[in-house]
Length: 172
Picture (spheres, rainbow, N blue to C red):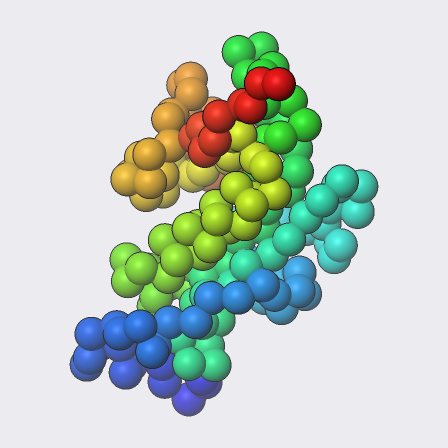
C-alpha cells in the first residue's frame, strides 16, 4: 500500500488533527505527479511550467509523508480592465490540486491560506485563478468573487474566473 493510500485509510478512521496536517513550501517537481493525476484530463505542464515568471512559489499540504494538496502562486496581473490598481501586485493561483482521498478534509484550505499569507507578506493586493466549475463552491467559501460566465475550452474541464482582494493599496 502506498504512503498516500495508508494515510487516506487512517483518515477514514480518525478525524484530522493539527499533527496530521503539515503545510510547507515545496519544489515544483514535488507536486508534479499529484497535479498530473488530479488535474487530468488537462494536459500536464512541463517543469519548469513558469520559466518567465517574475516570482513564483509552490505550497504543499501533507498528511504524514503523503502529499495531499498543492498549489502554485505566480506573480501575474489579472486581465480585466477593472483591476488596474493592483497591477504588479496580483498573484495567480495555478495548478491547485488535491488527491481524491484527501478532498473535503481541509488540505486545500490549508494550502490556500498558507499561500495567501505569503503573498500578503510580499505586498499583494489581489489573488485570482481560473477554477474548475466543480471547485466553485470551494473558492466562494474562501471569499473569492466569480467573474463572468462559465468558460469552455476544448480539452479542459469547464471553469470560471475568480478573484479576491487581499489587501489595500497604501497611498503616500
